[in-house]
Length: 76
Image 1 (cartoon, rainbow, N blue to C red):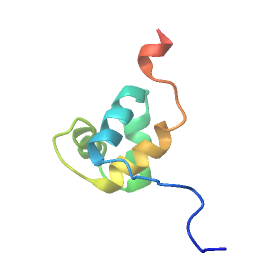
Image 2 (spheres, rainbow, N blue to C red; image 1 turned 90 degrees about the vertical axis):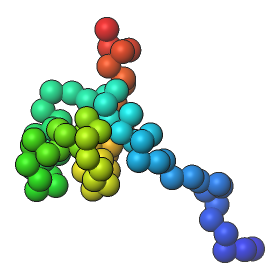
Image 3 (tube, rainbow, N blue to C red; image 1 turned 180 degrees about the vertical axis):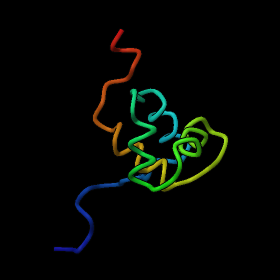
């Protein structure tokens, strides 16, 4: 038996893909909660989520919060 990974071919999501998913599933209070978790200011977190700046740490934390949610367009 080999020591290969049994999960198959897993490919990481790009920064842009995560940003799009976060923005489609963003809810009230997410910016503040992400700012507290990452210790950045809420205004900077908001600008990162709007695409003005790039910050992997903020995007990853916001993606983790929004990962299991339904998109906003499906809620209406």
